[in-house]
Image 1 (cartoon, each protein chain N blue to C red):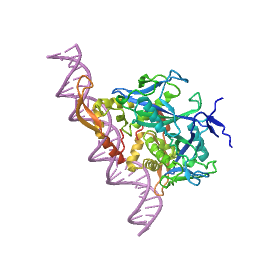
Image 2: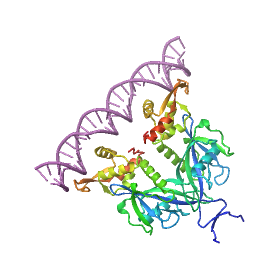
Image 3: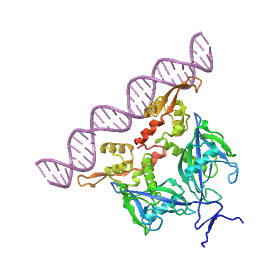
Image 4: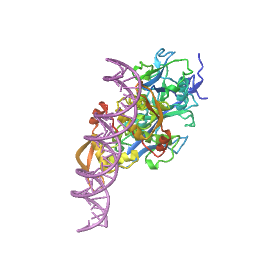
Length: 230
Length: 230
DNA sequence: TATTTTGTGTGTAATTCTTACGCAATATAT
DNA sequence: ATATATTGCGTAAGAATTACACACAAAATA
């Protein structure tokens, strides 16, 4: 019989962190999923995640998972909900502190992890292991609400980007359509965009201006108690 | 030596739910605090909370805590953040799933709990036990953001209320001042208020009209995918 | 009793924001 | 050459926000 090393007077649930990793390819919003190599749900796709260590915060745990999968160590990452349904893991009681991360696809190298990993666009997500479908859907809703208060979109875009890409991103996150000209007007009006001198040809028809996010201006406004209200 | 009944191969943190219980007296936003009867932090004020049972969700656990303190079993309650700093409880590693609850002060009876409980207005909150100051501050921020997407204010008001009380509530939550006439215009324009025939005298000067929240209309609009945008 | 003070209800003008488009320039495809 | 797709710039109408003015009722005060 196996010796259990850690004992308590009262039962304790196991605690994991899971991470919904969002990326953007210029047109579509994508999510990184892992194919499970072990039971339960072996062969099914799932969110990256793992057990919380006793000396790390949930934030640190989620960052660790993210680095294992993407090689990134400086991404935007936010906790959004803790899932606690008693039956959500068939093995034992496991509660998971769910996060979403926003990463720049161009900066993602393959992760250390041997596990099978793949980016899925939001409309091709397969059925997921555990309650990960629900976690993913809630992550999308929380990101959608967040973008009204924080310019989180820029975390998904490269250093420079076109207005078209920025609009595609907002449309993908909010699931709406904007008039091209009104969108640009509103974005410039926020005062958080810097126009560069450079042009780029993304479509074959015509070249367009490259933009940059004005982080200094944003930090300055935030200090003054500014509300985004996109 | 004590026998520990629950053993695991890996260490598990203890899991609690804490609850920031908001109330509104017609003028000020208030929070219910408990004076701790035991160490650690004996004699200090703290948020109501307790250990999560193995067969209940965090939501059920928070509802249970709320009922113990207020006698209410149908309040609006939302999880908003899980606090995981390894040193936040001096006894052992404890992570807490924090919630805020919105209750109608008139409906609150004293709780079953023998513990000393008191309502504090937001500007008279004493230093709290553990990291509860931080939890309370974050609850306030989360409530403030929530009110832009959901008409949560009505959870804090009695069945009928005056426009003045509604404005006081919004001003207390958002920490801003509105012009009386513009506020009423905006509120009526949302279409979620029903004017009753009844008048009430809250101040000695003049009686004012009683209003009612139009929940049916709100549920109908929400189904159609409506955004509040207060 | 007459006057002042305070809280409520209604209205309005100026300004800003949003929304729905038009049009020209540029380069590709046919 | 001509049609077509993409980008940048602009404008007019309508909606929403903001800053007030004024009237009325009742309590407080002179």
